[in-house]
Amino acid sequence: MRIKTMIIVLITILLTVVIMQNNDPVTFKFLFAKFYISKLLMLLLVALVAFIVGVLVGRPGKPKYIPGQLAEGEEDKKESNTLSDEDREYIS
Image 1 (spheres, one colour):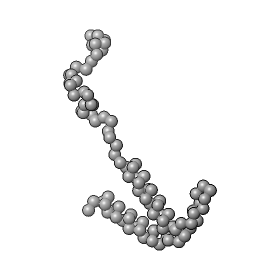
Image 2 (cartoon, helix red, strand yellow):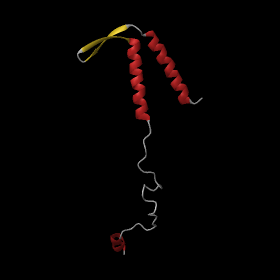
Image 3 (cartoon, helix red, strand yellow):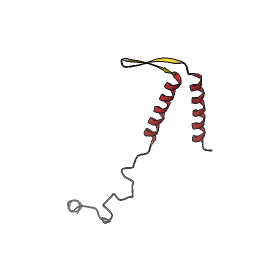
Image 4 (cartoon, rainbow, N blue to C red):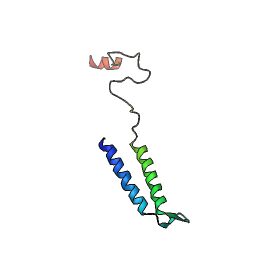
């Protein structure tokens, strides 16, 4: 088993133990409203939101440029000399 998998299993076990020990009802104030919700549901909700945010933040994006790879539409532009005429005049 990989270390990342073992850490995820350990965190899940610890989270389960903490959630099961905290099932008393508490008052939760949100803006102008009061909610009576159990700690169990609140901890589960916070854990779920944190997991979703972690997945979204940790997701790799599409790279904008990979060195050595041609961009779309540049397949037929395989010129070895990429200097413009103005650059050639300046050099000579």
